Length: 424
Image (cartoon, rainbow, N blue to C red; front, side, top):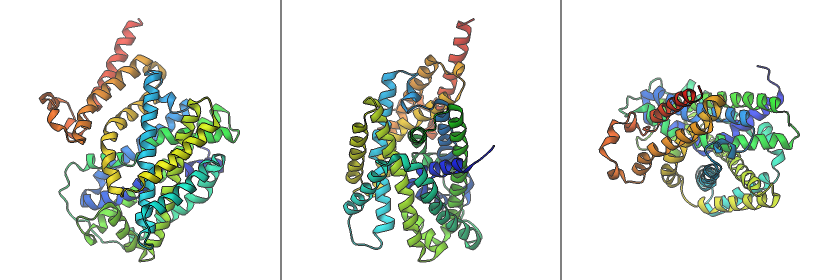
């Protein structure tokens, strides 16, 4: 696989837009909870936070359209509803969360100021970058990502060579599933369908219009981003596990991350961590707001006014939601993720397989089944577990909140068989 400077710049830009607040604070916390079972939570986390998102980027390379194209085979109406839901969730939860994390780690320890001031300055800068979106790939890929990676690798490297020799024994239940669902909180599968569109539009704005060349560039850059994410997540989870003996058992996600930075880089580590968090969160917020503005621009006939208005509204919403603390935003995100994440995974898979195995009827059937079997998980997440009927216990993987998975595979296979017979 031939790699050039442009491929690495795009790959670093992808990594940076993926690597935000959740991507930084969730892995060490997982390792802290898992202890000696860190390898199992890593496996689950990698599936939902690396493999599925990068497959989403590969699907984008195949389509080279907008996020609307991901679901249009179900129906245009469904695709618009799905797009609006994803973008509403993205600018309403993970984007503001980046400002909250930045405040709690980079600002609060040093300045006696409130969330409002931080989020106002933060999203003013985000807006500045978004309105200059043609330069996003170069600015992020060439300048911001190397600083982020250098700081993370310093924490991981020092931790590996100076940390405790053993991990604590824990009784964490279902470690693989715990890692899988913690990976949901990174929003990376959703991020893939949003950010992938940003990369494609940015390439076109730079004059790159050759379909095959863009496809190769996007896939290669996606692999680079995926490899970087894999190494960083594994390192952070392992460091969280070995340093768990030095931390309080009930430490929060941010407390674990702060402690890890101090253990590895000393008290100056807090300053490095603040810089790292600010850059990682900032690049993710840029990707989310730009992707949302791109979609609305296309919806209104390629209107630049719609792009600017959406960017401004997205940043204002970020300021408003950024007033809440990180744990609150994480908790209110769970119900939305229980519905939108399975559908997103299904759409990524369907857009990856050859067209003959993923015709519009198959899209409709698989997505309908995923939605149907995701409802119990959604109800559980909002405290309505009592409405579940007894038959749910007979659905494979339902106890792991994955009751939709096998029914989706079964309907995919059955519909393909039936359609093949019908065409004979």
